[in-house]
Figure 1: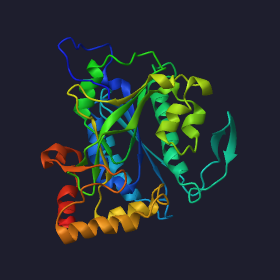
Figure 2 (figure 1 turned 90 degrees about the vertical axis):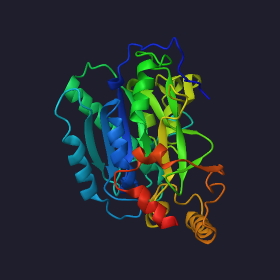
Figure 3 (figure 1 turned 30 degrees about the horizontal axis):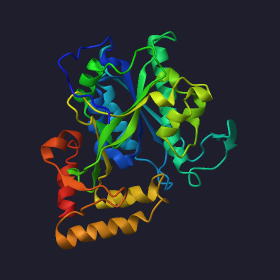
Length: 340
């Protein structure tokens, strides 16, 4: 695990926190987290793109009113050139373009539709968001603008914005013009309740230079998803990344994770909706596993000692540690009532 604890000789480098942009893969299944996510991005990002589909994988229409309200809320703050700029883009889930996948060093077309290849939709959101980011920055800054670093987040991965801004101002592991390196930032992982945290860290989010990402990698229906973006942006495939230079489990200057991943935190109704409509819905018998965990909580009044996804040991943290990252819709209070 990369040790980023503060030291006495730590000094700011030539980066400014506004050199980071964010691409968010979103759906209404994460609506409880998107407001704090976008608010926190405002502490460190110059551009934030939110990409969402026209439909969920269940074929239900997306909650467009929610995204319209989210767009209005955050774009209303864009009054000065120094303010973080928010872009919202929708893509058609029902009729996506053919997806390219890499096979033995060549590309071939994958004509599968989302219901046949659901992981493709996860990657489509990243591709659409990344393309929108490049268009937005080019229109505003010109084609010769310096390339940005891009943080790819899912809609339930809420960054600690001030922590990332502090780390970025002091970090010395990435060079502004070196596109051969990338980072995977450590995150806390939560299960069933917003204050029920795994005792192990994950590092799902990737931070990579814009000009290191190849078209094939960002368009690819790759089951490795973000890890696939890193793999297919390597020098071998025409990108700029050296796989051995990807830094894993990067922590903040205080030695703590800088992202909160509320992966399995929803109300019961929303949790069942998630596991029947998301891209990994066929991986496991999610409904049965959830019903078993909820039955234990109802019957015994306590949470399971381990989660059923990874087998992590679960520990309860104080509400104060997480309230800033899931508090906008009163979600935490409703969830506690729901599971007691």
